[in-house]
Length: 439
Image (cartoon, rainbow, N blue to C red; front, side):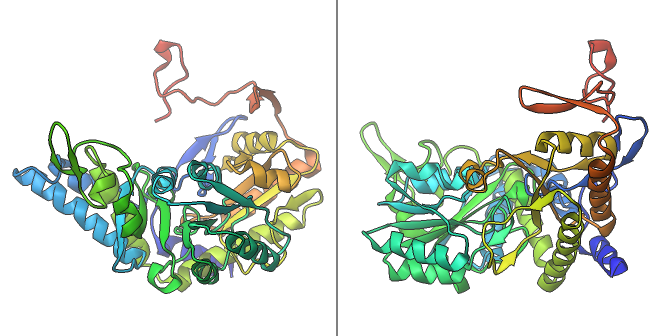
């Protein structure tokens, strides 16, 4: 089985940094094991290639007659079409390019004509923006079924405009039944928004088939870390709302006393857009579309099961879960290690083993509070993850529990670091007073 997983790792796609070597605090270097995909995924080769191809033609879009401008405009609008196909958007849904998921959700928050219902498990990006018109927080239960019953009560008590839910928890990776929730929301007279930042890199999504009204996701989690995101959704709310930003490109006509705003998507894309980011995101989506969805899910499932089994067998290691009956989970594993602060464990893994994980509260403070934790560790799996990486992580945690760290670690303002720190970090030369350049 290990050989099958490793072959899948190589065959799925090539990501930048898959051969990166990093320094160790005790001396020497090792190949970097990246378990921080849920924060930002490395770039797919197709995304970086698309940017390199477009760079010589980079120019302002939409109103330029020059050849480079025409090429840039074509690439930018073609990227919109790619996202429409990748997410299988319905005919009345439009693609608005943004900076990231947070930007997308804040944009939509200004368009919602009423209250929004959210769960208390959400990432801050899908929790904080809805205060503008009224936010109703529904506490999640210990099971998905009871959580859905609570959502129904929250939606049907009095009129609600929108149900905003995560596609996959950024802490535990647990997935909600989105098609079912879309049906429930519509039956209660509401629409549904899905924060797909963590779901889109792992699962194929059809807005048309699921009935999802609005979806937000980020390029930097979809293997295109070039600063672009998208909001995809029904046109009417977007056309009726005030523009997200007031400026050039969002208008049809301006006089000294009146502004005639353009319809969506241009209405919410004022200013010079991130052409390269949009092109990179489209290239990544094309690359992901070319991968068999079953192969993608199988690769992830095998590695996640291997990681969960390995961590569960270690005394003092607890895996985090929201629900006992989760129907599906993407490749995100959150855990704690008894007797060690999460930041100390993360620093140890990086400094002594060249392994990158995330620690903290993951911009989901209400969820961590529900779980009774001030912080935890998160290991997230992506296209570049192999079984050898999983075994390294499990082995490093075993060593920590059985023998403790080989180096000293201290926390300063909540940030854990090895003491002394022997690894170079600066990108300036040592003549400027910093560590030697490592790039």
